[in-house]
Length: 284
Length: 269
Image (cartoon, rainbow over all chains, first blue to last red; front, side, top):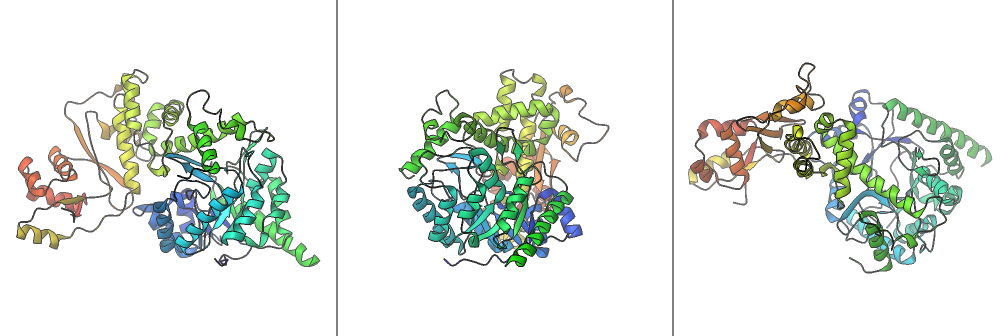
């Protein structure tokens, strides 16, 4: 499958659409280049939600972020879930669609969390096949996001970046690079987030996520409940030095602050992008 | 389900996360690399907490009146107990926790929640229906021409209820408790006569939970209207319903249609 252009302005900084902000967004129409929608929170076909989403879509491009494809899972693909994705593609014409490199359910158990799986050649065959089937069904490529983890498998034969690189080669999917997740994993597991960024095929990054974590002193939880930390901003600058220009998202899911805080974080991201592009241009 | 090493690992991981008995983690722990600064046991606890946290948060959204009545700490404790007992979960957290009503009832029956809270299971039922109504599919517009045609032809008529319609009969003054405690509806001078004073009422209160356009509402209705809708919901034809329930259909039916509780004629009769 051919790589798809993202359709979002390069280096533009979007914000995760949260229901507490929608009224203000619709009234004030702040200068935000695009919003990312958590699909699983907006699947309703009646009532307030679809009307609000359609109204936002009238003014802004949307990106559809999913958590339920369970790409790393071994249950059969949930076709009802994919039907919903397809319906929302039709209704809201999102410029891109993404999900995570994880599994979210197994047998009859639903975890509502992003669980890791071993990075083996067997898993690679399996996950590639699932991504192929998802992309064929949706008729477009998707972005696959690296996740924060709290354990690693003894049986893994490669690291997450190598696994993602192989997925891109095999399926033509894109990468959603979550820099906060790479940092959380660096802290929790001790491997280099820069090495992660160095290894993934950077030209295939279709979107970048920036978020905050919860510091538990001995480890970090990917809670999306804080401002982006300095170390993650530095990693973002490191990523930008490659001169790539994927759209960037400020992601905040818990203890959601006022819209101004998110706009402020987006402004900081834009400043860093601007500074970085000047540096890249100077040395090009 | 595949029977591969990957499937085996995911099954062991699942058992480690869902087993509520000692030893449930034993087969999975050796699969975890020990090089992280997070021990295998802590890693599993983090994942368990994430799952339980997501579900508890969903329940806080679905049951705000129960939370307000119990208080935040007690609600957290009760909801956590529910979540821990439920190892299956739900793919869509917008529809999580439907059986909370039964769980609360069992707590009251077992004396783990005071008898003062005997009305709480009914309130939980109302809250879940209210939440479900918010997410319900849109309804069709009632087809009066088709209805008239069927009446004219003497055909059996099976009426379709609104997708958002929930029904609840309670022996407690549930509507008042709801009005006092649902966020956005409470008024300053009627805070729950302290809900501990709630006593069963002599005749049941019949409530409909329904979303017309955007926001659901709770409406008390007469017993006749309630029984009529209940019978239609159990797939009885209009003629069969009228044989059983004594009411002035020329008054009641137009009202139920005008209120959009009845939205069409079923095709599958």
